[in-house]
Length: 298
Image (cartoon, rainbow, N blue to C red; front, side, top):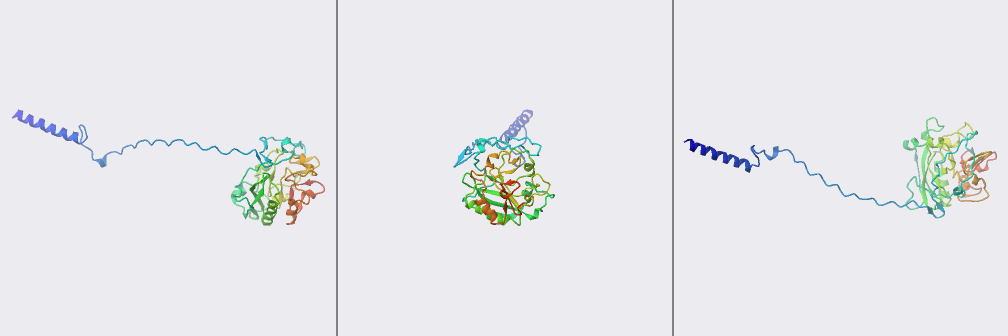
């Protein structure tokens, strides 16, 4: 009996173990599929690295225009007792300045003149020189974009912050300059930091609004109202006594030699601004401000 019982017990053990083996376990009951922990998925293979195609190199010449010299805007000039840096000899690279425009805004796709006028967005005011201390309210300024022709002969898009009273008229002015192929190097809005930065004497930004006083005075400039525009300052410098601004533009004090971008009596810029009743600083008697046009003549 004991041997029979032992055989029966052994047979039962074999059957139970066979059940465990078929259930996929070793010495433990099979766990239902739903209660099993999730399996860790295999780590995906990283996609192959795709190398971007190299961008086109910046051209060094387009027509008669050349790329800016690498030092442009980097060499700070020492300030003299007048509060301005002393005039310097114009570097050879800038004596007949004709620099390829680097676009701050997307150029027109069709190469034609386009313009927009709208209330000055907060984001534009924030990167301008405007503050609540300026003599014009933000609500009285307009953000203007206009087409302009570069020294490279191409169409570009510029921006101005201008008084609401003058915004539409300025569109008319720059439409006429575009049609006349009058070249402009750059047109953008300057920040307060840029206006107050130490001078490098080689800037050439065409712009309207700038919250600053008249040079050498405490009275507000017409720029601070958005009622004045400076056109190609380097080709059309300010000159009073020993002060020349920009300081490296002394070669352009000789107005007898006509060069591209210069504002000249009876030229397209003078005619375009005169058509909206604005006066030219080149007609001043006590000084010459060849870049400057304003609604009041100041």
